[in-house]
Image (cartoon, rainbow over all chains, first blue to last red; front, side):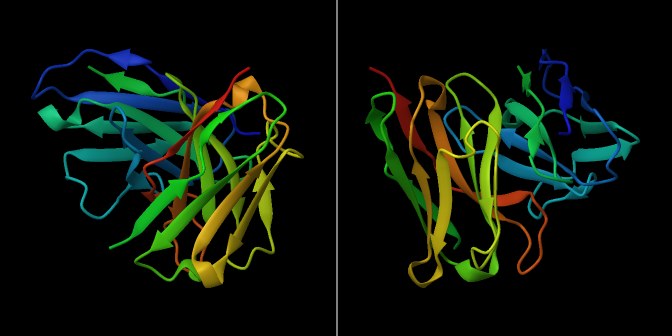
Length: 105
Length: 122
């Protein structure tokens, strides 16, 4: 099984800050990954797929990259609506796995 | 507008059974892989099970293999999760989700339901 280790588990930031979240995979699997945003009491929202492709409708301040076993999500200028929990996910093979989440507060 | 609406959650005793449903609308249901993902209270996301467009392939997390069954009825635009031998650790919000690929498999999910709560407790 592919394990996804996500860090940090939480980050304190202010509006306008640049925020970076990282996931490290237990093995290389190319670009089959995704990032989701989840707000309290709501379903997750797909932000990024195929490691760096922005889902339709997602603001361009969100970006992501992949290198080897490292996957990074960057919010270039944090907005009030971006305070949420973010999850990475490997989409290479079953069982599908998520990172543990990063709360941006 | 794509909509996924889960139902069937509730309180059940350990060892009991529950059947979740997900009613889909706004897209051609039979063209998409579908998936159940759960989230225990205060915890992260956990993939549970996925099913191919025609139901011919199903995949399960080890934690539910042999106890849960995912199925679908394309004529009714509905996805199901039959949960047997429920354990306390199955307590979670259960989401149904649509694969982002029509006729192809991405294993990422662009539409999610609002979730249905399953509580397993004596």
